[in-house]
Length: 128
Image (cartoon, rainbow, N blue to C red; front, side, top):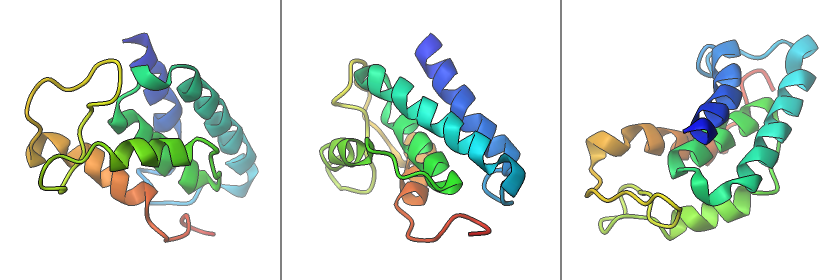
């Protein structure tokens, strides 16, 4: 549980500062948030298989928002491409240390898939 909490701490610093990606991070703070997301990437890489896809997508969305291009992105996207559920409408945890034992559904996966869409958006971060 501490892994999930620490991971959320990193991402929610960015989410909170940006009012859920609704406003740009002030230029005077941008470097701090880029450092935070690099530290988040190191943490994610250290405990990769203990993180859910939801955590990984949220990390990618926040890293993108602050202007980082994480080296771990191809690894996460490879996991994602191998984690789509039958209909390919959504992904679910099946390749990490705590795979989802329940059949995933749209309602339960909405949070993850929103971040999946955001982290794959070609749109530049707000204010860039």
